[in-house]
Image (cartoon, rainbow over all chains, first blue to last red; front, side, top):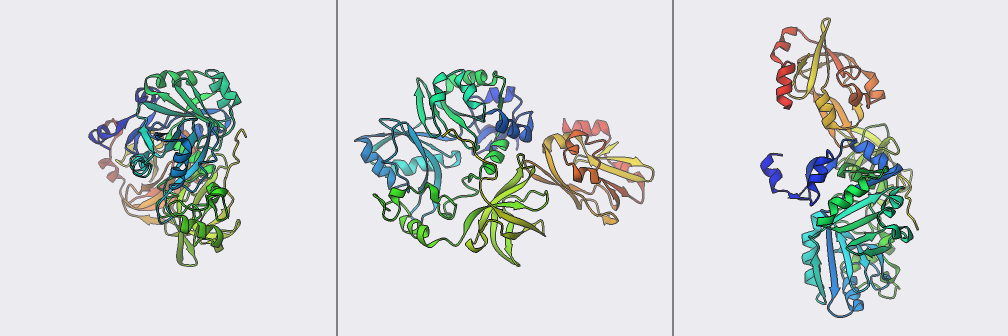
Length: 372
Length: 119
């Protein structure tokens, strides 16, 4: 990466803080992002599992959707784009969802929060422009705003609550997937690590000072994208553009749990969303492939792109893989035909031309710790 | 000690050449979690991929720095890959080679030239 190419990248509002903390900056989704700090990916990962890690995820899209009519109309319009129950989402609660296309593939995965008189939708960085255009085109009874004036921080780990409570005491009352507004600061109790924790949206001009306050606490350390990836992989969470994309359906991706009852066959508002024909059919009749967890034999990581074999015939591929610091062993996720998706099934992957066995295993790899 | 542009170091030990990766390379790789070494008695040509090294972040290849025969490999770093980060120029050597003519090492970088390379 030349200096010139680096200049074309967008800078995070807290760029200078990351550099000051020793962050190694790399290009990611059009932004110059810290991939790791001097502690290193392994140390940062284990720190987050044991204490509290602070992530800058400001590259993600924060989209406000205000109804031009009432919230119910907007909820029903949103339900045409996602196979989830938006209407039943209670005020100050959020839900995981996927935007689907007409073929039942996933345009993006997201969090949607009901915030009284509007929704806040948090989407992936690489998809945010396309998502915004899609929502803009489809939601005729909403006024949408992309919040470019706000950072998004994530504070994750068993000590996250105690740390954030030093600044905002009332966060202790929040439960998993609650959202709250504290003046200029928007908080949700959620994240992408499998740990208890928070995502904190804050105006750009306050963000670095807020991050510094958190980092001054004894249990809080800055964590880069490298550990964010290994943490979400251990938590069994898919990464858009890798484990899920416009060709994978939510059922293939193992996200059936995210399809609300109300939107399934026999539900109060069954179907009526993009790709419903395929998705509802797959819910009852199954799919030709499924996303599964995989544990490679031995210590060699098996990464994205590794071909999975049934005998000599390619039958799937690894979509995310790496080394699990918590298990001290390689882990991966990938797609296999349903007959090979049973827990414990041994399959073979092509590791640099050599066959290496893997075993199908349950997700997540590491137990989650949410405050229910 | 001699160095290659691929961030390997080479040290003559009797009639053998000991090969490892530099401190700089180890830092760039990050936490090493897996090392696959060549079999002994393998004949290699300069540029052959002889070692696979995996960090938490990515896989990398280590190339044969010279033509010759692999005569010994360091099982310690297979058993404990973290040694590559802890002591890359000492205990965590990768392999030993026998080469025909040790004078080819004269063409490689010395310490100052390597320091210039990594700036």
